[in-house]
Structures are given as structure tokens and as C-alpha cells.
Length: 372
Image 1 (cartoon, helix red, strand yellow):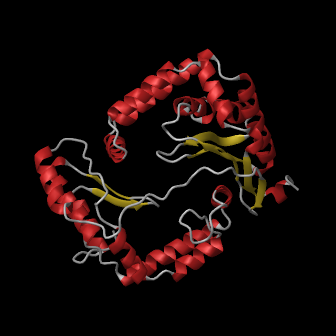
Image 2 (cartoon, one colour):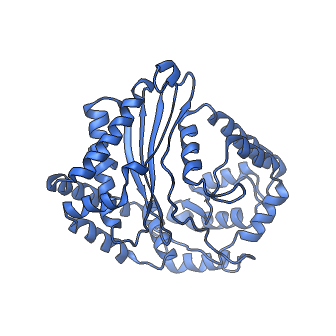
Image 3 (cartoon, one colour):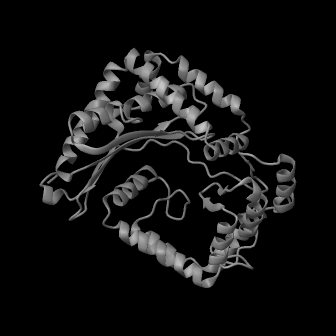
């Protein structure tokens, strides 16, 4: 996005404006994705521009140094930010089994800055030449368009763009992590961040997967769930509380995480309430009435996401990647709809071990005279 062989960054932006298009490129350990939003009349032009961005990057020296400086500045800024520090600490704890140099390793701020300053533009170009291409890829379009013309253009633009390296996914297998309780001081910061997290051995093809989606939704996945209802609404201890249960496909290291933002003074009470509410839920389970309400709300959210073009395009691409169809999503909806309170409660008990939770807090606790 910083420049092609024939366009500067500004010229790319000008062309996107002319085409009424939004184009972005994102990447991770296992894939790179380009997102395009435009009108039907400008789709062909937007695809052509996207192909130029992907296949003819210039990697200008000045832009490279600017990106490096921005990344380093972001890391430096995170040294005093409670959310950045707590998030880094959580990532380092959950990935502590990997050595530095492994793609799954989470570095310290100093290590990340050192690595960022060491990387060269030639290394970036070499990486791009080896790994970028569509030998393993998906192309999805949602909206109003001429299917025949779009497929023909896509083949012309990308059909011969092959990678020199054979594709192989980086796996993150489940490993048991020892429980811990960490406190990070961030002087003069108004808010505190609290995490409670645990790795769970599960894939999205596990029999308990639908029940765990529902269990997390009931526990902290909506504004009316148990954690926010108690900690934010009833006790007034936190500005924001939620939980998330992330489950991979074809990999077995799922992650549960509860998160809260509060005044540092209230952070100890927030931690106690999270522990207590998780314990009470595991002991008593969920009621039929709250499950019925959660089913209705969650299934409506899933329908809404599928009605949005961007979400649907991502879903179709993901299904294509894993050789699935929309029937897989329909089957999941059916399983969610058929769940009983006992199934949801038992799945949560099998997945979560309160004694294994990792707690991480970051805030100005010294001034608040807590955790001393």
C-alpha cells in the first residue's frame, strides 16, 4: 500500500478515491488478505489496482524507514499503556513454550524494537518474493456483479501468480500453562486492565464447541451476560467487562479470556468478582430462561453477520479454505438452537478449570494503594 512500480502512496490513494474503493492488505502468521469495497461499476478497476498493489510493490526506501519508525514508536508508547502491557504479558505467558525466533514467540518491548531495527529492506523483499502468491488462496465476491466477467478478470490478474515456497500452516498445539497472577505497575494512568485467561484443548469440530460458544455468550459474550451484569451493572466496579472464547480450525489450542477496564482502586474487587462469578456458574450452571434468551439473541446476531457483505465474503473465503459450505454454518445454528442448559453447563465445566486461570492486571496500583 506504500507504493507500486508506477504509483506512489498518494497516487494509490487518489486512484482509490476515483474508484470509490477502499482497499487494505492485512497479514498474519498463516495468511495474507486483501479487502476491497467498491461499487459494481468500479469493481474491474478496483481489482486491477489491487493486483498492481499485490504483484508490483516498489517497497520504497523512504516508506520502509517511515514504517519502521512508526512501529518502533508504537512499541515505545505501549511501555506505559496498561492495555498494551497486560496484553503483552498475557501473550508471553500463553506462548511461553516457544523460543525467541519462533513465529509464535511474543517478545518483550526491547526485543521487538531490536528486531524491528535489525530487519532490512532486502529481507522484506526476499520474504515477499518467496511467500506471496495465490498457489494456496481463495477469491470471494459478494454483492451485485457480473460473475463471468469477474472470474475471467481474476484469472487474468492472478492466475499465474505462484509462490516459490510450498505452503504449510504454522500450528499452535495445545499445551498446559501453569496458573499465575501477575501485577504490572503503570504510574499515573487513570484506568486499570484486568485479564483472566486459560488455554483449552478444543477445535471447532469438537463435540463441545457449540455448547462452549453458548456458554461464553452467557458468561460474558453480551452486555446482559453474567460477568457484565454483575461487575458493571450491579456492583458498578468496571467500565467494561466481557469474555471471549476463541477456537481454531484444524488446531486444538482454544483460549478463554475475561477482560475488564476499571479504576485501579476497584481492580482487586473486579478480580474477586470474576473468580467468584466463574465459580458460581460452574457450580450452579445456566437456567432454561437465560439460555432461551441467549439462543434468540445469538442466532439473530449470526443471521445479521451473514447479511453483511463484508462478513459474508470473509465467511465464504474461510469456508472455502477449509473445504466447507454454508451447510456447516447451518448445522452449527441447528446445534446451537438444540442445546439444553445441562449441555451448556457441562461443556463449560469440562473446558474451564478455575485453578488454572492466569490473572494479569496493569494499572497505577501504588497510587491506588492496592496490590501492595
